[in-house]
Each structure stands twice: as C-alpha cells, then as structure tokens.
Length: 207
Ligand code: SAM
Image (cartoon, rainbow, N blue to C red; front, top):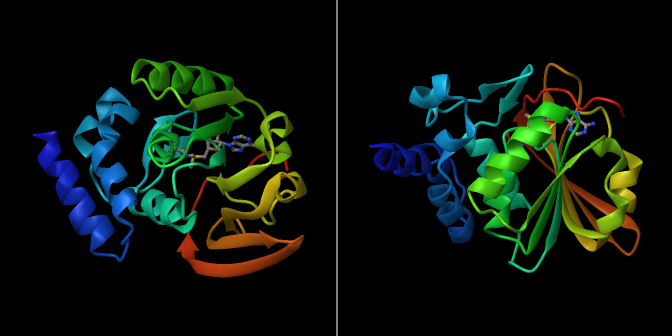
C-alpha cells in the first residue's frame, strides 16, 4: 500500500514542482518516509508537509528535502555534511547520492534514535554525531557539500571554512517566521550565492 503512496508523492509533490534530477527522484522513491516518522504519524507519512518527530522538531516536507538535495548537485563521490539530523530522512536520501554523509544533531535523544535507525536500515555510509552543528565537524572537513536543515539569520562561519573549494552549501536563511533557501558556491575563497524561494524551518540553535 505505501509503495503506491510513495510513488504518488514523488510524482505529484516533487516531479510536478520541477525537481528533475533523475538520481534525486530515484532516491526519493527508495527512501520510505514512514520509517522516519513516529508510529502514530504513519498514516500521514506521504503527506505534502513537515511532520512532528518529537522533542519539538520536524521531518522536512518531502519536496523541500528533494529540492535541497537537487541543489547540492551530487555526483556520487562527495563527502556531505548535514546540520540537523532530525529523523535521519534527509541523511538517508543523501546517503544514496554521495560517498559519505556526516550528520549532526544537537538533541542527544534524537541523535541516538537516528543513529540506531540508520544502522538498522543499513545506511552504512552515514555517521550521526551528537553536537552543535554551528561549529561544523572539523574532523572530517573539508566537505564537498553542506546542507543546513534548520533556520539561521546567517550561515555559521565554521561551515564556510569547512566547505571545500568548488563546494556547495544549501541553507534556509532568515528570521524564524520565514527564510529564503540559499545556495552558496565557494570558488577560490569567493562565494557565489543564488536564491531558491521561501521556506519555513525550525531554528538552528546555538549559533
Ligand atoms: N533533516 C531532518 C530530517 O530529515 O528529519 C530535519 C531537521 S529538523 C527540520 C531540524 C533539526 O536541527 C532538529 O532536529 C534540531 O534539533 C536540529 N538542530 C537545531 N540546531 C542545531 C545545531 N546547532 N546543531 C545540530 N542540530 C541542530
């Protein structure tokens, strides 16, 4: 039953809104969102919206997860850093499109839960770290791609520092009630920015 809901979700919510990257669409079809939401939310897993995952946090709307992934332009050999592991859904999608994913979560219980879930589901190229993502994770830097899945007024400097040359960073930037999805490309220490529409994320804490 949910396979049909999943393929409808990708067709109507993601492809229909303009996400074109075949590999991203394939990954979206392969990652079953219901596995990443609490049992009581299973019936809503394929709806076109963020859902609560406990601790006051959310799993992103599928379209936004797909759009942010597409903006990273992954080819398969990248090391990716995610800030805000949350449910692990975005990390699972990234793990299918990159070589290695490091994802940081500030809420310890959520980090532990997500670590266990991703291990059980055999997403073996994902490393879940409990910590403050505004500092990045220098141990594994530099990163070919960085994705921030919580909202901030500006991009934490550590993340720019840990981005590789020609690396791409995608983040929701702006006040708590609405942000703009921005993409930054680092070229020889210069930053090029493009803009990808309004979004609403829970806040990035501890910047
Ligand atoms: N990517 C997640 C997913 O696929 O489920 C959704 C992320 S949720 C919208 C934002 C997450 O960022 C929350 O789990 C929150 O606890 C986390 N967060 C907020 N500030 C953080 C910080 N400084 N470092 C790491 N995680 C942070």
